[in-house]
Length: 116
Image 1: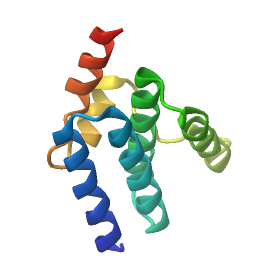
Image 2: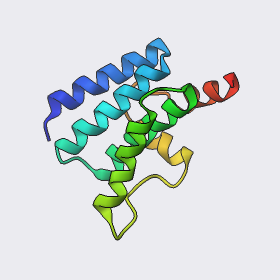
Image 3: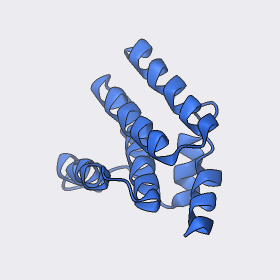
Image 4: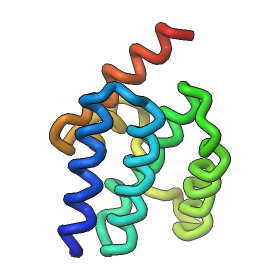
């Protein structure tokens, strides 16, 4: 796997969470997902990051939501006739994406749901 671009995105994701910026976090989840997929990474991991980006975009009203949903929809096409290896629920999603140091997905989604 190409570790340098992936590590760069992981660091950017950590910094976005430290700044508390959900739109930046969403963008970096999506970028990390693309880097992991391009490097032949584990589908369940990169799809979790794609889903996390979509959740944050939905909660924060981000303009990239249609693009992220399209990316998720393509995973169904690519894995047909089987279901893509997406997490079963939000807790499983958080457990996967929070393996990246500094990612506090569950906390951020809870804060966003309280905001509106």
